[in-house]
Image (tube, rainbow, N blue to C red; front, side, top):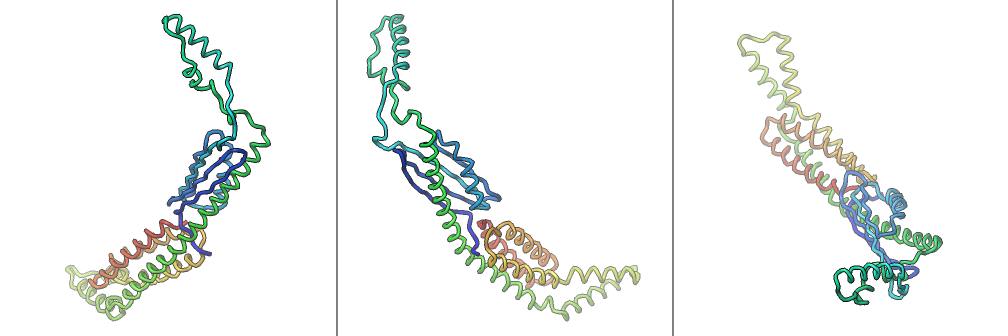
Length: 296
C-alpha cells in the first residue's frame, strides 16, 4: 500500500433541472481530519452526508469543501409579486403625500427586492429536490475520489524522498558505529584513564564509591545502546513506508524517538569526530521530520 500525502486539490461539475454546480475540495496538512464546509444557500442539508463520505476516504488533513450553484439561463421565467408591490405602493403614496413629492417611478418600484421574483424561487417538490441532491452527492464523491488520487500520487513522490532521508540516517549511524571513539579498546582506555584520575583524588574514594563512579562513567561514555536503537528505528521507518496507508502519526512519533537518541549520542560523545556525526544525524532527522509532516 502506498503512503498518502495530505495536500491536494480537486473539482467536479454537474447540472440538472436547470441548476449547475461546481464542487471544489482541497486539503492541507493537519493533525487530524478537520473538515470545513461552505455550501450555497439552501443546500445545508447535504453537510452530514459530505462529512460521512470524507471520513470514509480520508484519515487526516485540513479539508475545505465548497459548493457553488447557479441557475442556468432559461431555467425559469419571472413573475410579479403583487402583494409585495401593493404594499410598497401604499407606503410610497403615503410618503409622497407627506413630502408633497412626485409619485415613485415604476422602474424604481420594480427594482425593489421581492417585487420581481424569478421562477427559480418557486417552491419545488420534494422528489425533485431529493433527486438533485443525490446527483450533487455523486458529484461530490467524484471530486473526493480525485482528491484522494492526487494525495496518493503526491504520497508516492514523498515516499521516494523519505527513502533518501532514511538512507542518509542509516549511513550516518554506520559511520558512528565505525568511529574509533566507540570501539571497545578506546572505551577501555578512556575508562582506565578516568578511573586512575578518581584514584588520585584526595581524600581517596572508597571501593564502593569507586565502583559507583566507574559504573557511571561506563554509562555516560558508551553510546552503543543509542546506536543499536537508531538502527532499530531505521528498520521501523522503512517498514512504515512499505506498510503505507495512514501511518503519519506513527511516523511522527518515530521521528521523536530518532531525535531523542541522536541528542543522547551527542551529549555522551567525548570525541569531536563522533560529535560531528551526531550533529549531521540530527540535521538529517529534522529533514525527515519535515517530510513526515505531509504524510496522512
